[in-house]
Image (cartoon, rainbow, N blue to C red; front, side):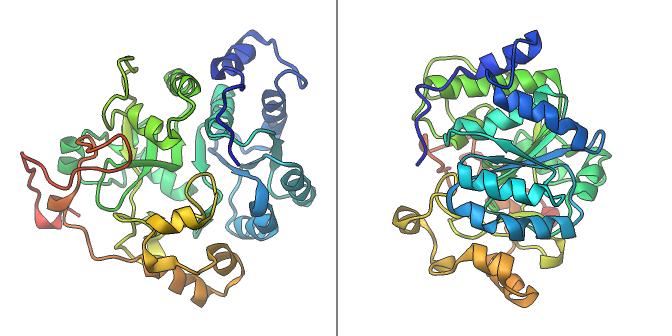
Amino acid sequence: DEDDGLDAPRPDTLLHAWLRGEWSEASHPILSGAAESLHTFNFGATVFVSMVFGHMASFLPAFSVHLEDLSMKNVILYVLDDNAHKVCRKLSRSGFPRYCLRGSRQGTLQKYEVVLTYLSLGKSVFWFDFDSFWLQNPEPYLASLEVSERTFPPDDIAKAFGLSPAADADILAAVDADSPNQVMNAFFWIRYSLSSVQWLVALMNWMYRRPHAHDQVAFGLFLGVGPLVDQEPLPRPPKWAPLDPNVFANAARFAGLGYWGQYEDLILFHFFDGWNSNQPGDFVEAFATPVYQGIDMFETLYFGNESARRSLVELSRIDPVDPNSYKDARHADSLGQGVVTSRSDPILFAANSE
C-alpha cells in the first residue's frame, strides 16, 4: 500500500543536494543511480520513465520485449521493491530496459521524485504509469509537436480553454475525451528547463505539506486548473497543452474517457489497473463503467494476439465529441475530479473543430 509520505525527506532537498554536489550513493541513491544511467541514453532524447512494484513485476519481461520491438530508447524503470528490482536487473543485463533505478518507498511523491531527478540532470521526461500499453514508438510524434506539425485542440478551442500550442508548451499532459483541459497525470511530457525544475519542486513541496491531497488534484492545480484548496498562493502555471486523446488514449473505464479516432493512430493506451498507482480492487469497480469488468487487461494486452488486443482497445471507442459539449475543468463543482456539465457563457465552435 502507499504511505502518506509524512516521514519522507522534503522534496527540495533532492534538488539542493544535486546543485551543491553534496550527495552520495548512500545519502541520495536516486541521484547517484540516475547520474550513472546517463551514459546509456541517446544524446538529447526524451527519457521515458515508469515505476514498478508488486504484481506489476510479473509483466516486466513481456513489457521489455514489446518496447524493444517498438525500438523505444531511453526507457528507465523506477523499481520500488526487491522482486521488481531483481526481475528488472535480469532483463537489463540482456539490453532492455536501459536501466533499473532502485527505489524503496511506494508513495505518491515517487512519480514526481524520479521525474524531478532526470529534469535536474538536464533531460526532458515522459512519465507513463505502468498500466499503459504502447502501441507505437512515440518519438516521431513528439518530434512533430516540436515543429507545430500537429495541434490538439484547434487554436480557437485551445485559446478558449486557456491552453498553449503544443510547440510552445513546457508540459504535454493526458486529458479526458470530453474536456481538453481536464488534466490527468497518468502520462505526461515535461520539457527540461530551469523553470520546469522550479515548478515541479514547488508542486512536490505543496504535496509534502498536504500528504492526503490526491497527486492528480495537485498536478491540475499547479497547471491552473481547478479551485485553490486553501489560501496559499501558487506559482504561475507553466504553458501546457493536452495530448490528443485520440492518439494518447485513456480506456473508457470511467465517465468522460475513451477515444473516437482510429485504432491505427493510437500510440498509448492507458487502461487503469486500479484507482491510484496500480492498486486494483473492489473500490475501483464501484466507480468504474461496466466496459472492462472481469477482464484482465494486462494479460490480454501483453499475452493476447493482435486481434484480441485490438478488440480490447476498441471497446473504448466512443462517438465523436462535439466541441460545443466540451467541459471546462476550470469550472469545478468539487475539489475532486468532477467538472460542471454546462457553462453560463457557452463558447460555440464550428462543427468540424474536433
